[in-house]
Image 1 (cartoon, rainbow, N blue to C red):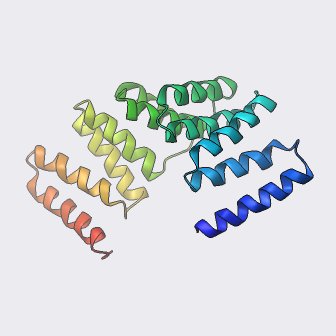
Image 2 (image 1 turned 45 degrees about the horizontal axis):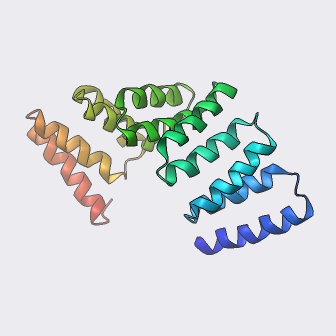
Length: 193
């Protein structure tokens, strides 16, 4: 997969030499750089995109993703805030904003951001898992288990979800449920589906 992203970078560079005004080329290059974990270069690409088109919510969101990858979480949240001020319905910005807020320990705000992303149609396992984690961090175990349970339906092979369910069930004295969830997590860990 890494080879394909490196090939994509070469293609984006060639396309950029032909048309250095098309910021979507530079944005896609930045996304490939993110995948390759070349975060500084990705941020530089996204900074140029934002400078050229400051009204583009996707560019601000991608810039925030690069900043979050560099652990510059406050700056990332500012970029996500800018994206959502441009487009209140840009679900990806809410998703990544929630992730950054969770990393900062701002669990309540993270839950609100994840809920907004979900309301806008993103209900992938990662969002539900992160929402569950934020709720769990706040001691809201019943709601956390509900989020993890929804995540287990959307992403049944997510081992972490099953482990979190087991921990909550164990803490609430639901030992049979906890054993069942840990069996599921163990099966995934060993490659048995």
